Image (cartoon, rainbow, N blue to C red; front, side, top):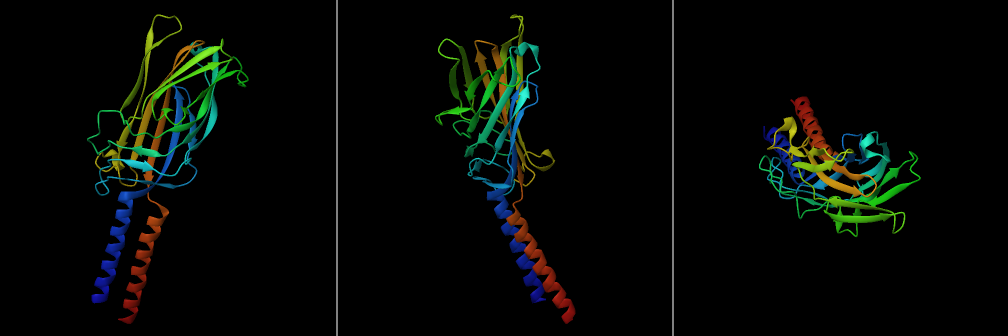
Length: 276
């Protein structure tokens, strides 16, 4: 009986250790999109399971903040054709993205802050090209996603570019910090110069079965969004959004730890049965 009690105690201890690891350090996968309106986004993904730190978590339920500590875990890019005639003469968007490191906070279960997640930052490196006239992109306006590590996507601030020399096309990228609420770009003039439109994307944080009080559990999901208002002397205002989705998953080490405990319990149980 004492041996059996010891086995169950060891199993409970292993389970508790696994739960603690899940509360503070957890595996994740993610995607990073650069989306222009409702068009197909330029997407980058992380190619392998990585770890992030759930600093300030109250157990495995509420999520207060998370930290990405390994750089360049989401990388990639693509070219997306721009089929909206109102975007003419822009014909495609070509981008490459690299997720940096940083801390995102002001998340706490269902009581999420109504403010944007500033001054916390999670910068996105890389650049995008607004391709002009030709689909192959021989003519384009290059725009860095961040500059000098002080402003850009995931940080906020203004980036200005002069394309094709001093007398060429000018562009401004007005960036905002990440939010888990709604990112809106309003008052976008249409081609006729009269009507205006509003473009928006939505962020969120929830756990399994969409419960807002268990975001820090495995299967919890956080979606961060940030608007970038792109203004050019060639094509007016273009709404651009960065969308970062992070899905928490158990780390292989946690599975191994719990699995080894289960195997040990099974072997000990079989020995006891044979002895009896």
